[in-house]
Length: 249
Image (cartoon, rainbow, N blue to C red; front, side):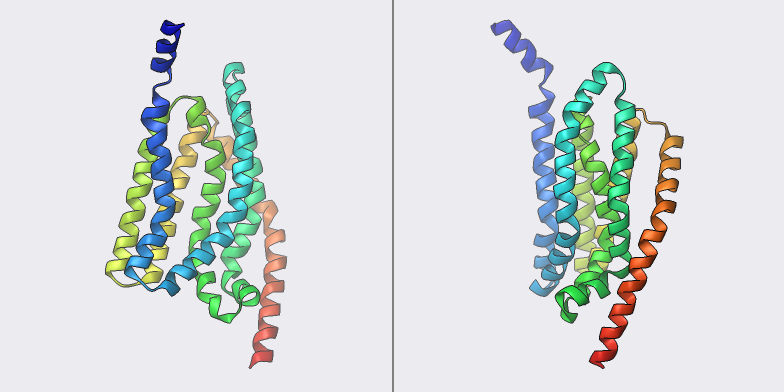
């Protein structure tokens, strides 16, 4: 009926008013680094950033996108049944467990790893990747959980976050560009992304009413369990890199 149609339009008006602009800003924010790095620096710098970011973001994005699609209907049902905090916390633990070890490995040995896989001239891309790692891991954890913004109908909050992220990235890249320091631009970009996605993750867990003490205990436990799996491959990569370097010399 027409009155029901009008009622539903009023009930869900936040979707076109906020979510569409939020999605637009999110897409623009993802494209921003390539555009501004290309404006301030050479195509070589853009290539370093693009490779470093793609190696980190592509696998994480595929996994995160699939998890988000599966989590959304579960979160909607959990809100009705009153256990949204439980499934959100479980997803947080799973994402941290999956993403922590590969990201930390790359953060430690990225230049050497890029040199072995892509060749010595791509070492700089590995350095860039090191500075993007914190941003990527926090994004990997936060993005799938962010579907609760829609479930809880907090689209305005999501829009405010995307505005802040977009603005922070512009400022970071402009500072690096004005100073003509590409590494500084990447460092600031990674720092802004890490801080913003960390805040976003905390905010999402608070919205789901997950207790902070549980989160802290889970983080400490997962980090401690990951240490052996990080140290052994790291030592192997450094040994291999040292052997290749000696042969080259």
